[in-house]
Image (tube, rainbow, N blue to C red; front, side, top):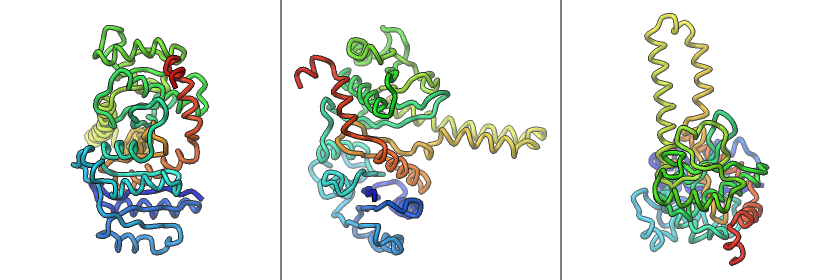
Length: 340
């Protein structure tokens, strides 16, 4: 029996979409138990949704929830009894194998660091997810947990990604660093310093700077970047996929010949675009904390939340945190490893 904690509060669309997703995943996974954290004002609605699954659902009423507008510093002072903190504590106390939250990203990061702690050698966790590409999937991080990052933190992200890939069977993961050009002189001071540090310490895996047009080339296993750049790149990709779909539909509508072939093309297009929509990769793993933590979009609908929950289940069943920690130590710079 697997148990996951679900923080249903704080999303743009309210807890109802999370309730629907939870109900759906209970139907599709008979070995799943849910611990749902919520506030008293939505308890009655939750009880109605899960009346047929009472034996597999535990509802924990909390004093408050963290709003999207709450600042991380305030969260640390006043958010310890919130739905998000309570859900994280279920993982800390080993009542659940993982947690998913639809709430404030910054709050999730600071509370995860405070409650679960970070892995050895990690100062800041990073949001990461695998993107579909023309070749093998690409693990990209950070996607928004840290808007700005130092050179050392960018190197941490690269090592985290490589460690995660090695535990998934990739013996020699190719790691790139997102930049505005591939030349050594390009980019900010932090990116240039990170590139030099990675060349010195991860020579076997580091393949240099990569530009945004390399994200979907399929030759990389890991692409490290600061959270601002990663988040912009991810959401630009989502927007582009939506625009392409609408533009092709418009072309089909205006062309009688193309309109005749529309049923065929629509199915093919739907299959391709499904790989790139936010619903497809709605879950992002908070790598670097000592627990399995997944963040889903604040604007997630029922389908996206359900996809993110399935992603969490996949991580809890496939990711061995002890192996990730061991690989991370092996990938640490020699002087750091000696100091530790």
